[in-house]
Image 1: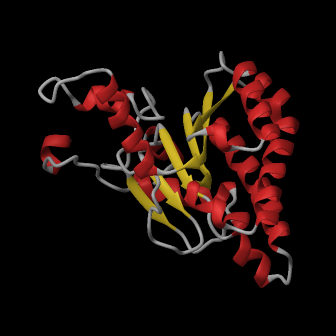
Image 2 (image 1 turned 60 degrees about the vertical axis):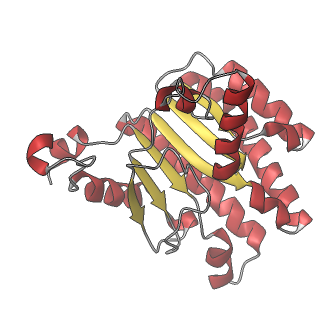
Image 3 (image 1 turned 90 degrees about the horizontal axis):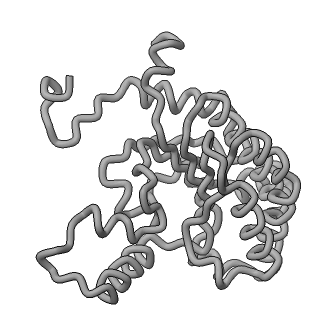
Length: 240
């Protein structure tokens, strides 16, 4: 497919399950912390590539509710890397039109992480070129339960409830559902990620570990996506 054809079929929203930092490090005789540091660099390069391509939404599965079960030392490092990343990138995000958003419950995050997240979300709130959603303390099942609880509190009757009303109660709100979900490291599952939103997403699984997932790797995923036919339950003729 030509470059112009690829550009015409770019997804509006890409979501990424960033997997394989630990295995990447183990293969190289490095510590898991070095793997996570390399993963931060990969995230930085993919954000820049999405901005360059004009993709308006990128969601990164950063820290799930299940990740709290990891060793405390590793959890602490992950949040330090997050705070350092946001501190380093805030000025560039403001300059380049990148807006920061969160999917998940920030209240349980360490104070330093909560503080800088709130600050950067506020300083970038008017930006519109690229929205980067960080799924933090996130659970797809809990997101659905949270939406149900909110709807019940608002007093909706069963007959009044619509898909549009339900979707507005999700963390994603009015953000379009992901067109493409990428998972690195060779695993082929969605791990409690965007369970409602992924109903018609295209999936791309790659054996590449996240620290090695480069802009070229993203281009491979986009080429694969551009060659797919998304029918949404209709025939190919109806969608042509």
